[in-house]
Amino acid sequence: MVDQSPNHFCASLPLQHPGAANGASTRKSSFLWVPIATNSVEMRNIQAGLSYFQELYPMRYSDIMAASTLAAIPMIIVFFSFQKYFLKGIMVGALKG
Image (cartoon, rainbow, N blue to C red):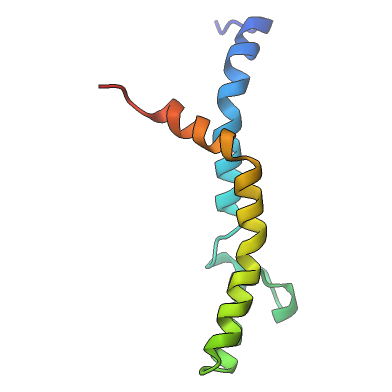
């Protein structure tokens, strides 16, 4: 029988935060699922939109790089905001020795 005491939740819940944050961030950027799930180009995420833009205008590398930089800024802000949780998740999974 599993012990459902409050101490169990107090011990295991902080360990689940880094894994949940990592799982939430990787599920949002699944590139192959977007064309299947959406009917129109307007509903695609930024990665699929950049790929579609590159198909329409193949030689506009400066525009694609500018859009890629703008798309990366929110991800960088989120990473630096939750950096201690990401690093804590890496350290929990590390092996000593």
